[in-house]
Image 1: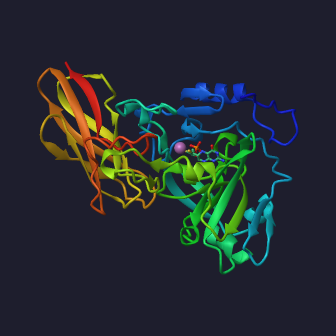
Image 2: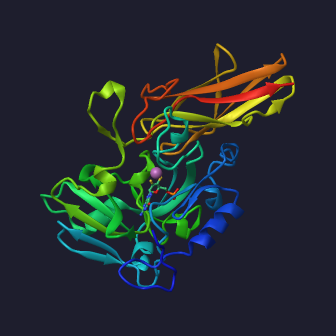
Image 3: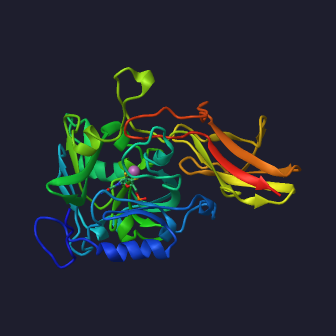
Length: 365
Ligand SMILES: Nc1nc2c(c(=O)[nH]1)N[C@H]1C(S)=C(S)[C@@H](COP(=O)(O)O)O[C@H]1N2
Ligand SMILES: [Mo]
């Protein structure tokens, strides 16, 4: 697929120079899977910075080139079944009450590379997940201002990115769009959104897999029928599972999951005290417990800090290893709704929701 250089104008949006975007990702130490469009993940050992991930280290998942939107002419259009059609400038949004939330985004394909038999699609290992502090306007405020009309059942969110007549667009049922924690975010970690992450405006849908969090958001349309765009109808379904007998289920909330950030894969650790640390999250409910095993039995890890409703939970286990040799460290998270991470996630044809227990082999010396 040919890409547009920034100077080209026409039907397709202006785009960020892909080479420049790739260089920025490489310089930040991201693992690049694809540069046209840019797709890159964080190394798992880096997930354990502070509570949030510096924006330059946050994974990037794009389906098209990065559109280059002009902040001066930018308008968020709110159309369809509304009493008043709106065209909100960035200043209009800045002048509305703002809300800041820590939210973990995870790509539904995170862990796809670990499914057996292998699945085509972006080969994410485990770093297509991160947490940031997002600031913006609560979506219901804008919906109220526009005034939803009675027959509306869904809200469609359109991104400015696309190619060949296809755009990235997804919908949410109107009741979900009325959740005050769904944000029209213009800032990430206290600064304007980087271009990669949706500048100047993106949706943030807490606790959902991140395909719902539409970047470069330029239009919101209220519609009276379920929406059927390709990113809604063809992609983001659990299908081909042996247990589901031909049924398919839409990908929605993030499944419960923990990752071990420390020690790293094949790390050599000296005999004696050993600290095992990582993060855990679930779209279903806050994390209730994290258990770690170095053999057969599981030991309960300590949860660090206050649990946040939409962001990952850091955890640690301080233990000992006294015998030299290979050890497999495994971790299993449980959320307060009782969802427990499985040993293996069920294979599905598009490779989504792989929340299998994370296993990290190490060597005790
Ligand atoms: N407009 C637009 N929004 C998008 C996408 C996209 O390609 N275009 N990708 C989605 C997917 S699949 C993911 S996982 C997240 C990634 O967000 P990030 O790149 O800020 O990490 O954005 C979502 N929003
Ligand atoms: Mo994704």
